[in-house]
Image (tube, rainbow, N blue to C red; front, side):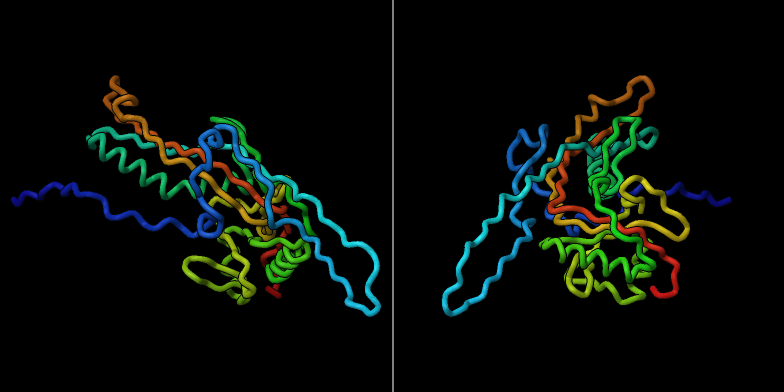
Length: 280
């Protein structure tokens, strides 16, 4: 009887690319400008949120009156939060170097989803904390009867508020409907935009809920428009696997962590979208 050889243990194939999402549209992730920002957060006064525009006539005789001066724009800020991935290895017996490489791969694939959750719905209480979503302060627009109407409202609210660098956010489930209506196009690069060039983020970490946690139904979910989103991040920190090794059970436990700050400029707007109407 022939002996069937055991499967050969080889290096894993190269990991897939990170899915399209917030990192393809946001500014960053960037290194922290100063060390203390990773612990205390970031605050700055933006340049792109004041929507005042003044026009006057060139008359003869000369125009009388006064010119107006716009105030300083409202400061925006972001507080730090941690993104953690873990890796546990038992019987296969990987080396410490292999375990560290695998934890870094996990972080590169999953950190964007974690940041998207922080931005949209936040992180629920329990476990290692609760963090509110940055979109929970959104101004709610009139509900849209279909995705076409929703896109119209969201693009217009960015224009009405003079938002430069604004973007639109939706779950991946909305992409086929927006594509079918010829509302979005791909390019340049990985970026997806409206016909006007407004970036559209289809985040795997987005859950489609409303600003007050309104649940997704079979026919209704939310889309958002926002100003620019800026991200700062530390390098990944991986403690020496020897320090986290479970000697009692002979299990290697590896952990990787990055500190992030996310900031949204100029405001956020939300619209409930009916996704099954015949006009989309």
